[in-house]
Length: 134
Image (cartoon, rainbow, N blue to C red):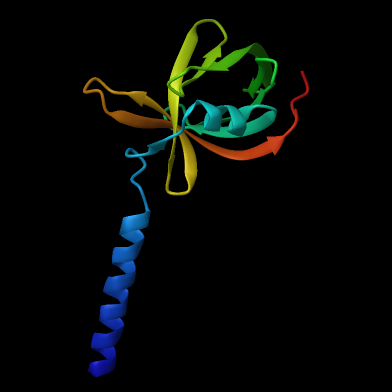
């Protein structure tokens, strides 16, 4: 019985510790302008869109141009980072979103009608250079 209680106490302590270090996906630590620029500039990034359930590859050139491959087609656009840390992509219309860190991953966020952040994209595989063939 004593071993069982000790094991249970250790499990409770360890589960409490992970709760303190793990941020909810919708309660991120937002990145600032420099952090976003450093993470994306000169990298090809694989991302997963939660709503559309699709993966894309996007190359963020340091000169502000962007190549994005989705649905086996490549589209060209521009990108920049706002002073508040939002990353903006311009293909047809500009869209700017916050980037945050939660649970050891980077996510792209939009604000819902109540002004709360909602994760819409999970970023993965930041690869140096352009791996997209236009």
